[in-house]
Amino acid sequence: MTPATVAFRGARAGEAPLTWGQRLMWRAVHLMGPSQSFLNCPWVLPVYGRPDLAAVLDGLRALIERHESLRTTFADAPGGPVQRVARDGELTVPLVDAGAERPLAAAERLAGELGRAVFAHEREWPLHATIVTRDGRPAALALAFTHLAVDYQALALLSADWRRLLRGERLAPPPWQPMDQAGLEQTEPFQARSARAIRYWRSVLADVPLEVFDHPPGEPEDPRFIEVGMESVALAVAATRLAQRWTISTTSVLLAACATELATVSDRPRAVMQLVHSNRRDPRTQAMVGTVGQDGLFVLDLPGTDFAATCQAAHRAALTAYRNAHYDPAAMTAMRQEIGLLRGREPDLDAFVNDRRDGAGWAALPALAPGADLAPLTSQTRTYVTNAWPGVRFKVFFTVGTAPGTGQLSLIIDTAYLSRDQAVSMLLDIEAMLVRGAAG
Amino acid sequence: MTDPAQVKLELADMIAAASDGVVSAADVLAARHPLSALGLTSLARIRLIDTIEDSFGVNLDLDEDLSSFEHVDALAARLAGLLAAQ
Image (tube, rainbow over the protein chains, first blue to last red):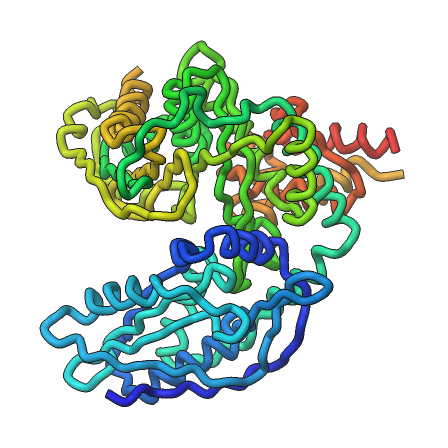
């Protein structure tokens, strides 16, 4: 089928320095080189109702016009990297017939394929789109974005916009865009906050062990990095129960469990992990499509008493991590290089946790009697090995998934340091820790 | 001079705003439950700290006891201490 073209014309054009969030991604895509497609964000927008092709293309046009991030290119300039917002342009959108496949399944597959391409950030729009048709009508939009343009919260905002645009609503452009954010980050209070965050990171980096694990690397698998996943209703129910018991978030409970497991496996009394953080605490950024996330540094000293104390300590450590997660990445890099000179090399901080759920809990867990024994639920738990990424460099990367009815916890490992059997046991240990805690 | 009662009212509004409407200023002022129990999340708390720092020009230290972030009276007292020290 002949591709369609979306011609857009937004409210303004401009050039600005990168925001802190964009700067972080800019560095990440360059560090990752050909593996940077790991950072792409595949996404599917279902076509609600029965609009024709023109209406769907018009919806996409409105989305791009509304959000400057979707018509931005990125480039190195003499004064540092910049974002360039175009007022107008055209996006080519291929059309693909779903054939025998369900349109949404086809769109998910196509979005995954689009997501494997590396973006040419200087000359390409930050999104690739394909329309999936069924019997000649548009049925879904398959998309992939560069992570420079969106984070997961931005994708949720786009989904909400999309629903309204297809209903024919006219939406005014959001007042706060990444160029505005870049300006704000140059101001004194933000610079002071950045300096404070960097002082905190520095205090941790000054004496954190240089390696995530003390043992030397062994013979890795090929591919070297694998992701082991677990789906456990028991994990979610137990974490929810514990969070309610101690009036903390399920995120704090999961952080406590993941950090305890890392400390146990690395045989250390302290776990240091980077906390992937949406960072949208400033109200102005809440409706902004852009990439705002920056990592926090989560430090948990195991109290050595009980899991309740660990969870309270994790709650406090998470607050400190969030608070110090908003900083100028260039200043952070400079500080880390300075630490590297002092200590002989930069400490390896390749242990991560990412809770992708945007609210605090799971919306669709099975109802159980209060106090019901959770151990039998663990018989439903399944584990599996998923994607292997050739170029990611994580030693340990926990991700909490967004499924509302079960606890999805996955773990990317570097097989030079951990075996896939160990990774599976780590996930099951975490489940057992929570189930035991909830019973106690 | 900052009026303590006025500061408390301002804080209650800030807490309500930081919570995205989950917690009302009236609930905060009634102070029958800790803010966590009312539904103030960790992120809302960080947002609140940012707002207090930006509005009053103070620096709040998270290494100190976090319990002052559970009741508006304790928070107002701590803020009064910081403002007096300026």
